[in-house]
Image (cartoon, rainbow, N blue to C red; front, side):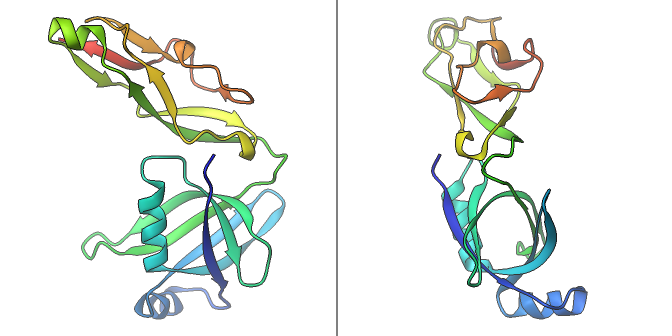
Length: 184
């Protein structure tokens, strides 16, 4: 797993007025919470956060969160709120996870290869489930689930039970749930 780091600063004040001042300064209000941690109010640089999201792309949003002088902690970006018109970030939720704590996360699923049905039968690969729910330790969180679709013909689908087995990762979705299908 490729983990990226983002710097944060503690903030004393909460509420819409102080959040508005932060946004005017180019910062985004945030909160970090976890099972064994009291929620803490933070702020992150909006430009740095935008670059972080670009680097993450369509992969699992696991980051190292470094707040002020404290050690970096592993966190998952749980929610990002955006302004509807200005296309700016208004708030971020981080969930801190412990090294030995099992977490359930949604991992993006990507088809790999060109299916037989697409190549020979003029079919189209359809993504039925864009993400797959897994349970694992933070160190075992995969960046994405890459599924080989080369054997699929028109009318075939690839199910959760057919996804590659990854060490330390347990699929939480129903085994018969389709992930990819080839349709005409």
